[in-house]
Amino acid sequence: MPEPDRAALLSCEEVTVRFGGLVALDTVHLSAATGQITGLIGPNGAGKTTLFNVLTGVLCPTKGRVHYDGRDIMSWAPHRRGRAGIARTFQRLELFIGLTVYDNLLSAWEACIPGGVMGRQSREGRQHVDEVIERLNLQSIAMRSASELPTGQGRLVELGRAMCTNPRLLLLDEPSSGLDSAETERFRDVLLDLVAVDDIAILLVEHDMGLVMEVCDRITVLDFGRVISVGTPDEVRNDPAVIAAYLGGPEVEMRAAVG
Image (cartoon, rainbow, N blue to C red; front, side):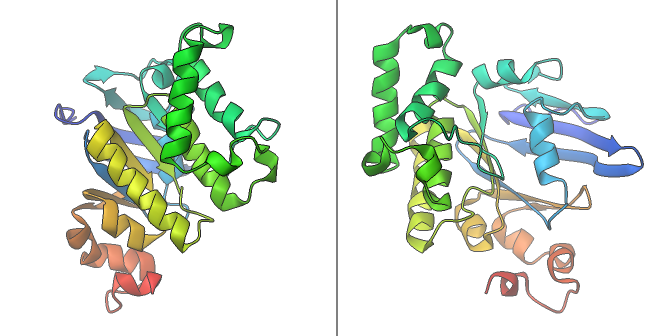
């Protein structure tokens, strides 16, 4: 087995997941570095969300290792990974619909701080939540119930909730789904600001290829659970294997899929 990438905040080696006779992930290698946005793309059913579930401890792989900040975290429970700075959003919105936007964000901060739910460091928590709300321009909906939000705003709230956990690694699962063009531009700016100012690592699963090619430093491509390409956006865009996986033939350029 290859040695883990010591320069990366996150690395996984030979991650394999089998569900009976179905191989959802097949010897996947992937890394994500601090200060960079790493894209994870592929057709529907390629195994992207399954890999996120492995990285967050929700799913135990059949084989393989996951390293975070130089440590093997295979034995860590999901809550321990969360408190160590691994945060995620979900392909389907998972907001607390009975809470306001503000309380959704505050609950995330309380969960990541020992004693937070008992009121420990409450002043610091509310200040942090206020900063995230301002950063995402959520002031106008902060006191609205999450159940009232359209999908686009809900996506931004879910991102804000992840940001309130003081993450070092953000795993974003199709976060621009449901955003209009203006919201997508704002979301792009937030991602670039996070890696530049907060110096975190982002692993981005996304079907908006325009956004992926614009913000990602490196991209890993999955198809039927296997890595078929790794490289810069330009390298991946022009890789015949990637073009074939998306469009079924090398004669059509990948960017036509988002045209």
